[in-house]
Amino acid sequence: MSEAVISGMTLLSAEAEAGTTNFLIPNGTFFFVLAIFLIVFGVIAKFVVKPVQQVLDERERLIAQTAQDNRQAAEQDVAAESEFKQELAAARSEAGGLRDQARAEGRQVADDLRSDANVVVADKLQQAGDALKVEGESLAPSLSASVGSLSLTLANRILGVDADVSKQQSNVEGRG
Amino acid sequence: MTLIKEFSPVTSIEVGSHTTATWLGMTVNTDTIYATLVAAVVTLILAFVLRAKVTSTGVPSGVQLFWEAVTVQMRGQVQASMGLSLAPFVLPLVVSLFVFILIANWISVLPLQFASAEGGAVELLKPPASDINFVLALALFVFICYHAAGFKRSGIIGYPIKVTKGHVAFLAPINLVEEIAKPISLSLRLFGNIFAGVIMVGLIAMLPSYIMWAPNAIWKTFDLFVGLIQAFIFALLTILYFSQATETEESHH
Image (cartoon, rainbow over all chains, first blue to last red; front, top):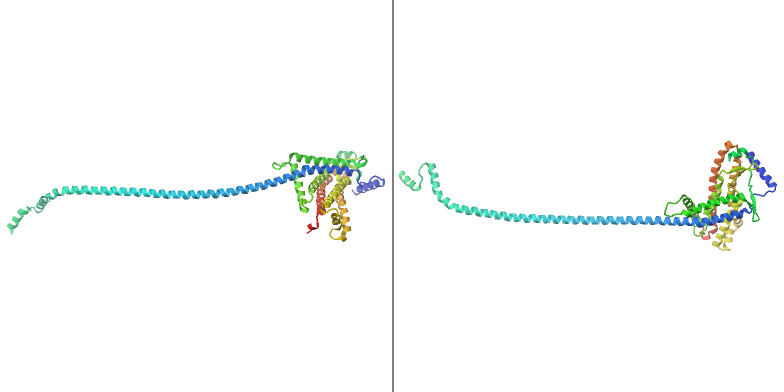
């Protein structure tokens, strides 16, 4: 390897001694390369960097827009949920009110019916009582008329003697 | 290519030799111009493919992702060192420089070597940056551009005073030397790296063909990395020089 370097060096120095051009001195190539680079520079400035920057800006704008959309959507979501909760609470209290009202109405109806029934019952009792009294009263004279004879019969049977008061008086006097 | 080497083995390396012609009364290295044109055509094809398919809402193509990655990276660098508004053409300039130099450097990875009549290893497509004309053209263009930007920013009289004087007056000679060194170092850095790559390939080509492929593959892989790094450094230093030229006293912290 080192021999190769040395031979290269000798070649280089031989070239220099022979008066060939020094490759470190620029020549006309400079201008052609410069011209080529200027064309590349112009094309890149116009067709690459400009659109790429536009794309980057546009993308940044889109990202910002999306972030804002997200934030808005989240806010709307929160608002909708609170509204939903509010509505739900209102509906719930309304339902409770309706339930209480229905319960009160039901109780009212039941009370009314119960008082009506009480009236009817009292009426019926009264009627029954009256009927019984009338019947009793109608039966009482006949029954009380038969009380004397019946009790005489009963007493006769128990005593085994004629317990007729009129007769009894004479018997008592006779004994005495 | 290996077969060709077996028939006519490489026995020496040729350093800095070019095929020349006379165009418009000037001596030109046709091989450099040929390789530069190939690099330019590849760059332009990439540019026009982007132009045809660029999209901001759809799925970006691979070409668009490449250009976007380069543009975003360079825009970040420009913004970090000088801000985009000071010299709006810096961004397209550094993007062009980076991609153009990158493709020009990567041309050399193609295994298109043959042995010349004298027994030296010749590449069909030499990396253009191994020619001093290529690097000087780019570096001097950058040199002129950033000084123009400096004149525009600090004025016809103010800018030369600022450049020479720097922070303290007695460092003026050093500042002048630094200014002259900038385009030289910028160009020779790129030239030296790529030129060394060409010499390495020439040396490796002198190895026997049954072992040559291994160091060749390793070196060309490394050369890809060198080409990328050098293209990036060239673009980065361009940004740095622009920021130095356009900064004002107030912007010192």
